[in-house]
Amino acid sequence: MSVDAIGLPAELLQAVKACGYKNLTPIQQKSIPEIRKGRDVIASAQTGTGKTAAFSLPLLELLLTLNKGQHNQSVNQPSNRKLKALVLTPTRELARQVFDNIVSYGQFCDIKSAVVYGGGAMPSQAKTLQAGVDVLVATPGRLLEHLALNNVSLAQVKYLVLDEADRMLDMGFMTDIEKILLSIKHKYQTVLFSATFSEKVKILAKQFLTSPKTIEISKQNSTSGKVKQQVYWVSEPRKRELLSELIGVNNWQQVLVFAGTKESANILAKELKLDGIKAALCHGDKSQGARNKALTDFSEGKVRVLVATDVAARGLDIKGLPYVVNFHLPFLAEDYIHRIGRTGRAGKNGTAISLVSPKDAKFLDNIEALIERKFERIVLAGYEFDAQQEPLAKNNTLSDKDENKNRYQRTLAKNQLLAKKAASSEMPKKVKVKSKIKVKKKRKK
Image (cartoon, rainbow, N blue to C red):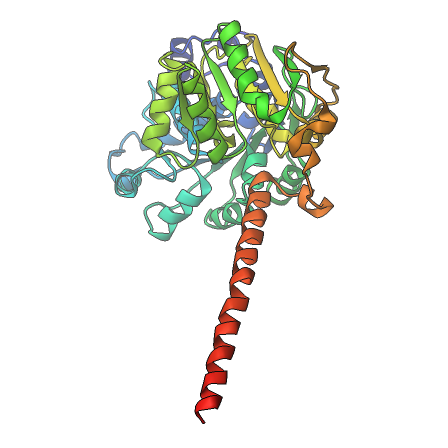
């Protein structure tokens, strides 16, 4: 369907065409008419299929209609510029991406948008909010900070979007979302978008949406047919060696690599540089400025590899990204879908490779069960190994309970155990010293 056929206002149609849009994607064709009707909507579609435009275009159209009665007033005055549309996202990267898209779609409209997220300067964000905005894109935690400081009011919000809702729930934002929704004082329309439908998302929809229209463009929790997926079976200690060989031999120039933790991401980036492969880092310990620079350098081809943690799985939109590599598989199977969704976007082809060792087998099983697909385990010549002799597999003494923990929890548990052992080894010395002192005192008497 052509973008002309959906009947967008002239200002929006002009902007959409300026962005290079010619045809609507399936999720846009099905979602926009339902959202226009004022219905609550819960929609699922694969990443890279145009979900942001699917909710942003009807949002901006709604605001244009609401603002028609304000032409005789100065909208530059804070009292006349009330927040009417709120978009919640789980990460800073996604918040920034959504904001940039909304600005592009609304470039010919008299609509003011803003974005707030952790890591940004509070004073400048507060100043922007206090000046008055029509649309606000925010991460839950930072929005609650601004609400507590009375920098913004949600009393007039008429349109709420929960983008990547499953990720927000996985990150523990349920309580924050509930607090935010209590600040909206009247009836509002809610639109929930996600690439996956977990049970948590269904519970959230049941709790906060009213008779929602459910829209599914593809089978739930499916991956894009545009992404070629491969699994390389390799010994854990040789993963980095294999990754460097794949990049070098195949002359890959732009590769997004996902590591399991910030620490492993740091180590991997250093080792790749020692192999002569330029790499940058993107994870939670990096400042927003450093993360933005890493993304810019990667997008412009100044570095070949961007090593990231799952903080980058949502929100990264790198045009034409050809390769994604899972150096470590994600703890949550749903995150696999979001990770590989960074490639094969906007109808283009992509390749997603997972480096899997015996200790990752359980995570791979969960992914295969989720997407209902069995992967061939590829063993590259020169990387054959005996799984029974795999050091990490052989020395794995975790209990069943520990196996259900993620990497962060297991590391924390291990550190706590070491601390307890260290403390217990010191205790007898202290007791022994005390007993000697008591004996001496008795002799003096």
